[in-house]
Length: 89
Image 1: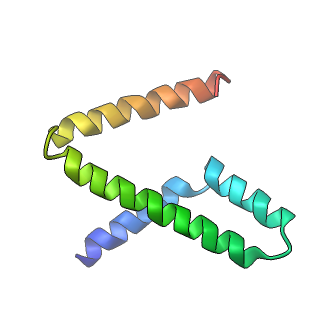
Image 2: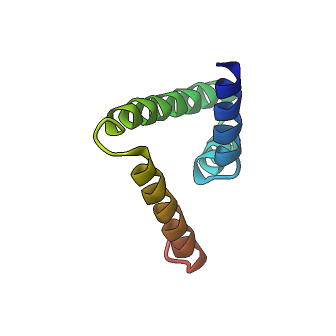
């Protein structure tokens, strides 16, 4: 169980580094004199989005095989990367 927790932490932590959410949080904290509300708000937002992802993922896998979800996610990530590289996002 600890291995699963650690691997999930590492994956999410690395995925969140340098993304738009982190940059927006840095901007908010730079503009604010009080960083603790920014930290609490951004932490709660990540917890809520993770909650949705975990339980929606558990529900969807009852209807759709995990390999389809994984392949679809991979294609969407590649498409988003291409859109970002082309300057359309």
